[in-house]
Amino acid sequence: MTDVRPLYPFPGAASIGRAVKAIHDRPEKLAIAVTGGFAGLQQLLWEVGGSSRTLIECAMTYSQAATVGYLGKMPEKFVSQETACDLAKAAYERGRAHALSAGDASPVLGLGATATLSTDRPKKGACRYHIAVCGGEAFRTLAFSRSEGLERLDRKEQGWLSDLDALNLILEALGLERLDLFDPAAWPTAGWRPWQVIWPDGRLSRAEDLEPERTLLLPGSFNPLHEGHLKSAEAAERQTGKHVIFLLEGGPHPEKGSIDDAEISRRLAQFAWKAPVMVTRGAPLYLEKATRMPGFGFVVGADTICRIFDPRFYPPAHEGAKSDLGMAIALLDHAGTRFYVFDRIDGDRLRTLEDLPETHLPAYWRKRLCTRLEGRWDVSSTELRAHRLR
Image 1: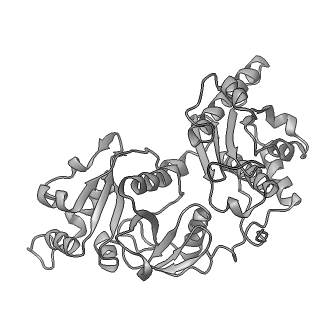
Image 2 (image 1 turned 90 degrees about the vertical axis):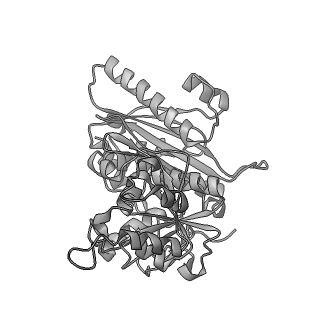
Image 3 (image 1 turned 120 degrees about the vertical axis):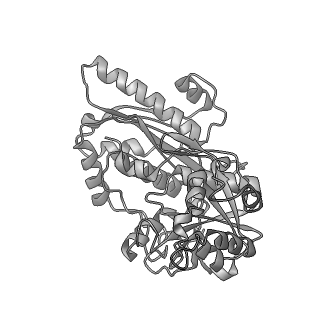
């Protein structure tokens, strides 16, 4: 087996102990329901004094029958993000009921997780696991999945990593500092270069080597990267047959300004073992991105497509002239650009491709430049930053 230690420098006992103590020092209670692959999570929480202040219940629904009994229903798939979320919600409800019966009004979090890891039997699919935490004052859900890179670990290492990922999701839910599971030298977040693709396993390639016939680009700020981004990419790949690469615009963004190098490195680290990503510089407008990457399609939300063709971003060349939007549309068409558009909640309304005003993009050009994709994930990075689980 390939030596994976440089890729997964698991944190030491002292770092883990500090993280667990920070959890025990919080007022939140925790109820856990996990399947195989997370057997060490309870041990991690128990080994640091104070676990009785935190843990209400830990259930391991190892068999499928036990999972059905815990949920009270048959899941569509036993190893899926949906089942992890259902387990988290069931754990939350059980934990809250136990706490209230004891007269404890402390806030409760529920953690659920499912996994299929290395075994002594032939596997039908790839190793993977899904984790979810729900609860808090706003009853929000945080979710995390991992598959890429697991085949390079043995069974014990896979279990160790899954336990640490679950611990990290608890820390994130509580707004606490996460454990660092990666060696920066192994995943090149510190040595990134503009217009260079960083693949999930840390390999590098040039933007010039990408093929527009096989590749879509999904731009964003990714602060943070969340399930909506990843699900959008998966759906776009499924519906188009192309592979999605995320674009992180370093700036200057026309509305958000620039991101410094340290912050770019932090955001890039979110993509390790999840998805390919490329930092762009000096291409704040989609017209500039399209000029730099001719022939490529861009995956966007309906709220974004309205901003892309907003005339205010294309000021006239001189006073008294009309907006240069018409010229921009012609240049996008000439570059072979296409936009793949998902429906999107914008404020308190649902936006679709059909909501794009004629003044922004006439129907002829909308049909020529845009394709509507099925699916919608109403997750906002802004809301996630503002409403961490408490």
